[in-house]
Amino acid sequence: MSALLEQIEVLKRENEELRLRLQERERVDALRRALRGCETVDDVAERGVAFANAELDRVPCALLLDDPVRSAFTIQAAAGLPNELNGAGSISVERDGSLYERLLSERLLVHSDETPLESMKPLAKAMGDGRLTIAGLHDSGELVGLLVVGGNLQQAQRLEEASAELSSAIAATLRARSRAEELAMLEVQERELVGLLREVEERDATTREDLERAREFQQLMMSLPNAKGVKLEGLYEPFGLVGGDVYTVSALEDRLRIFIADATGHGVRASLTTMFIKSGYESLKRAADPGALLQALNESIAGTYRSSEMLFSASCVDVYPKEGRIVLACAGHPPACVVRDNGFSLLEGKGALMGVRAGMRYENVSTTLGPGEGIYLFTDGIADARAPNGDFFGEDRLYALVRDAHVAGESPAAKVREAVMSFVGTRGLADDVSLVGVRILEHNTN
Image (cartoon, rainbow, N blue to C red; front, top):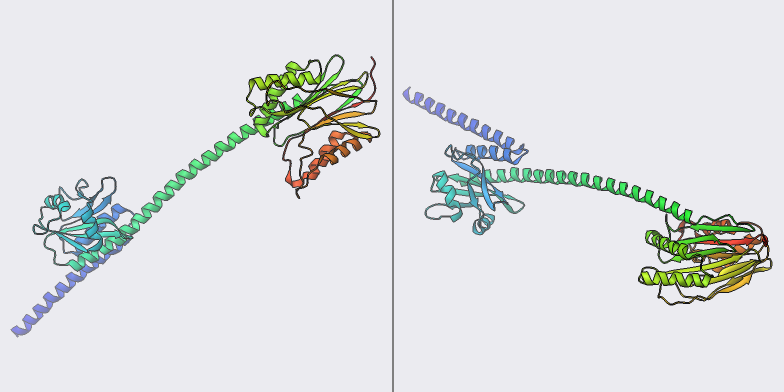
């Protein structure tokens, strides 16, 4: 009977031990599940040391993570250490090369009096334990942390399993944190980009408003005066909102003076050049004849600006309505088209581009116009306009169009604009387009 009772007691003790082990295993499994559900590194550290402490039969342990700023591993959480050390982030392990390299290739390292690790001595002293076992925590081949346990550890396999669980959890949270940081950075960059785009849009709107005003001012500069006995024609179509062409007609005492210029380039810079040209013309517009005006204007421009800054072609025509006399001078500009009842002819004076150098001379050439006849000046943007297939509008087409419109009593300016815009189609203009001309209605003898 006593033997049976002893067997029953043994079975009770074994059942109790089994129950306790099952309870401990359930607790460890619960910690493992909690560990895998962590969302932050701090949560992983706190639950990780609790998991390791339970898994390794309550041995003192500390979890350290890499701190790139300090170039060391610092304690994030601890269990079973002296109270004053638990969670002490000030304790760190120097991230020396030998420790790093060994933990990349060896699963566990042991620090003891017999096999000391220099970088682990401060932690061993703080933990009050001469023997430490260290497992590396890894993420994609990089050492990101340490799991350090004190005492004479007998369960190396369980430490390796615990470090593997911690490595997996830490790697997941580090990647999640990295993604969150990247998303936060992207949000910041997106806000900055949106702000920059808004600023650019506002600047573009302001710039466009300024250019619209400049366009209006340019067109105002080229408004035509009322004059008896003649009909004036004008066309101005810039490549952009503003351009480098300019023309003006001045009603002087005994004649009309027509001036046209084409500055090199396009856009804002070329339009600024036209402002200087127009200003120079206005100060010299009462010169004795077209050649004298171009010469004086060239002296002024060439003496003030470098040749690369202010190059332009120009033509100036004096129209004497009383006698129908025409006097023209050119500076590297396309010839004028003189239209008569029987066709057209070209009138061209010799002279180089304006602004190249001082000391240039510009010759005057002359002809006469009868009632119903006219003279037209252009910039080269008309003849150089290109169709989508690459064909040029050309001078012959231009002269014939002006002649036909003039003879038919229609507006050459309107016809040229319509024809050029239709010709270029979707290709659009590649240069500024300008035309100015005069038709003699009658010889005004008053």
